[in-house]
Image 1 (cartoon, rainbow, N blue to C red):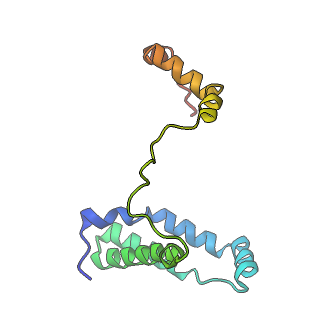
Image 2 (image 1 turned 120 degrees about the vertical axis):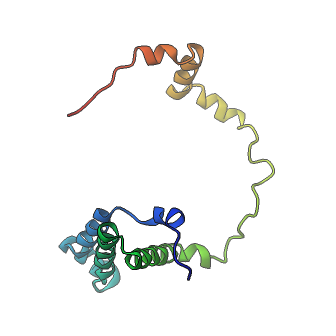
Length: 143
């Protein structure tokens, strides 16, 4: 596998704190009980710890090997999560959208929409071009 290009692959790496949170969550008593209930045994959480350690090494020391291991772990995690999608042989996957994907809604949906707050709000904003809304807007700040 070629060396990952920072500009292309780095977006896949989560903030390091998230790996630590995932590890702590995975090893919590509540999670262990849930794992035992669902799988009949507790699952191995060491990959989260390994990912956290690699993330820290990459962030602090700019360690390219740690970054590569972390990216490989993320790719494996994504493939495992999408395994059911890729192995699905029940539904035929589309190559393009249906011809009539943007046809108008049926009349009953249009009539139902006319009685919604969203419709009236959008109409009101369109009438005053949204300018009045910005001038009279108040911002709520919680400190």
